Length: 121
Image (cartoon, rainbow, N blue to C red; front, side):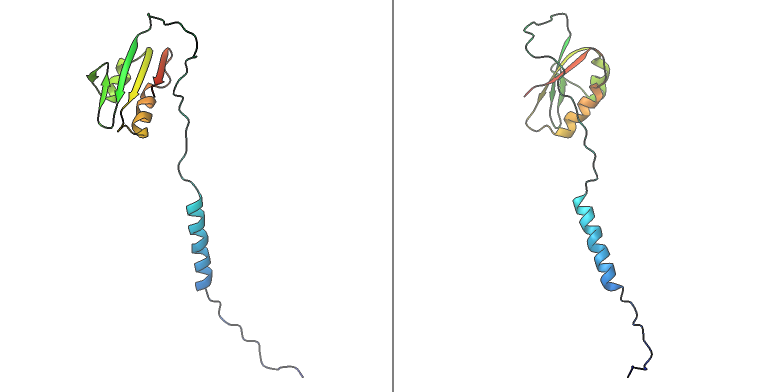
């Protein structure tokens, strides 16, 4: 014989569903990356030419965490951006220099015709 009792629907518990949603959110946040990576060309000269062009103006930049010099004189990023237009720039990195500081300098010097930038190791 059939059970004649009416079907009673239990209320849906949302706590486990919310726990699963938070776990999925946490997983996707930890496995995704929010920063964009760019590529900076450090040198565009052709090695092995063997000749030195003495007519090219050369600039020597020493870059540190707090120090920035252009040809031995203290300077700032804005001054370098205006003083260095064409020629060759040699960048020497101090032990305390950061990658962000180098990127800031290269960003100021990029996109100029006739400007060759070399980062010394």
